[in-house]
Image 1 (cartoon, rainbow, N blue to C red):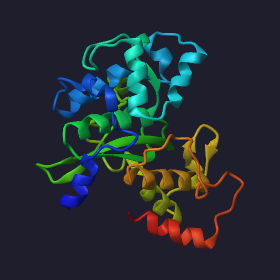
Image 2: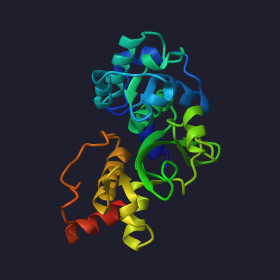
Image 3: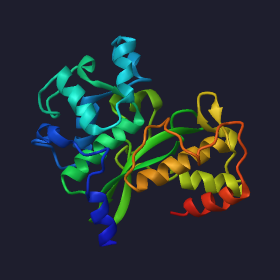
Image 4: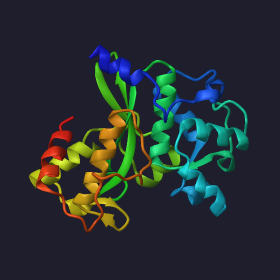
Length: 252
């Protein structure tokens, strides 16, 4: 177990702040405060109107920035103060759930706390649905368990979504990683047609998030729309050989 925890304490190519690590000076140590810092840096692309701002299409392209170092570079252009200094919504980087997750992972790893990104499905955005989402897991040394944290959920989103749980300890039935949903679909316990985002849904989508989650567990925190040979399109059939492979991956 110590080797696993040491592995997740190390930065990945994605989460390494690089030359912008100085912006992490004076980071708080508790999880809620680190979530507040994350929310101070990012503005979710789907929630922009809720914060009373209008941003250009050019600004919205920031959601494609892949690495934390790249995000911090852009954040410094918008406001070059430490990330702990409050900033207006206009001064925040446009991102998505994956970006909130990798930022929190980056800060936790920077402080020597084991952390990892998880890709899967949340049940608190649309009633009855399993919606494509990312959260961060960190190792709680006192309780000796991995704890799920949704750094995206600030006071505005908590109120709008009527969240009734602690975002810093998301229950296992509220967010399910890709492996759990894949196993649920294969067992007939979860309807794949309820899994996805917007008009994209089905077992093919679950397969994609299963693979992205596996990659994240290996500290390769890809963008939500990154694809590879094990991520089929909606019209592609999964081979029996791949079913066996994916069933094994789902048990990680």
